[in-house]
Amino acid sequence: MSGMWVANGLSQDLPLGVVMAGAWQGAELAIWRSASGRLSAWNDRCPHRGMRLSHGFVRGETLSCIYHGWAYGTDGACSKIPAHPAMVPPAAIKAEVYQCVEAEGVIWVAPAGSDVDLPDLSGLAAVRSVTVQAGLAEVAHALPGFVCEGAVWRGQLDGAAVALVVQDRGALVRIHALGTGDRVKVSRWLDGMMRLAEQGVLA
Image (cartoon, rainbow, N blue to C red; front, side, top):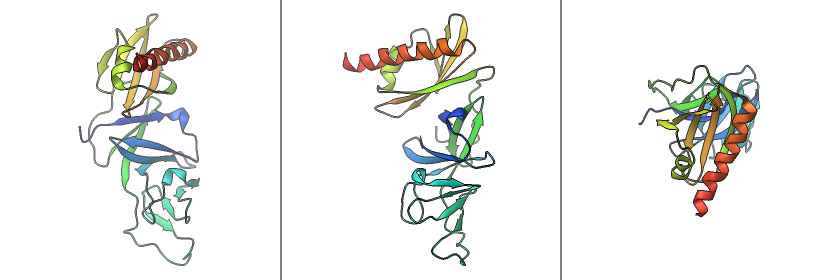
């Protein structure tokens, strides 16, 4: 469990030069894509004053904190302190780095050093991500016929395979949908499933 991968979005949700907030088992993360396309995931706190790095901005191959502009390279090490431009930042100033990879259109995060295999989603195309204002139990109830395989729920829609990669966030659930069939049909079905799960909270 300590090394498991958690899906934090679809590749299409994170274009070049963008940072977004993410999470791993309760830890808040900043996930960003550099200008060259490299993905990084760090603890969402600047080592300087604790400002959220997910509020920062990407410039080339660095992510800068929005507070004092301290810049960090893709390895998490501080590369620039604007208030002291001539100073080489000490090696100890470094963001806490997580592993971050993408496979089959899904962005996955795990602690550094994890050697757990990613779920197999080969042959499936990314559809969209949604946030369900319900708990995991309500989502499960809205998925009759689907089989849970860890963080992935698998089922069929009109004969086509559908996989829902689930990110449990407690009071809400993030779902990243993939499938082999008509993307529009899968997206519309996903809307109906969301409504059913959210109605279950009120029942």
